[in-house]
Image (cartoon, rainbow, N blue to C red; front, top):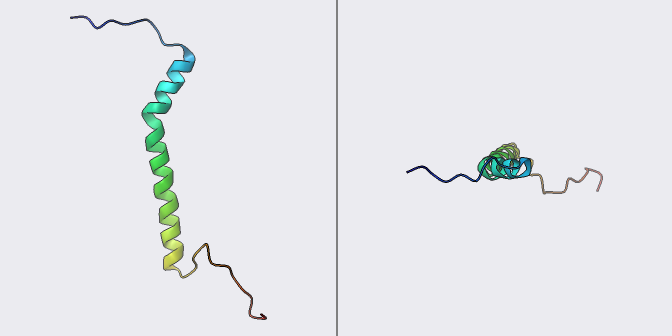
Length: 57
């Protein structure tokens, strides 16, 4: 049986299809990179969210 096809996709539809296909993987990659950076900072003893204070306080 031949699958029914409605013709070529509009350029906007092509862009949305690519975004839906690869977008989640891109977001996952960004999250992994950010978490690794945060974990490296925590291991170095410099957490990002802690306010740094000078010695002269």
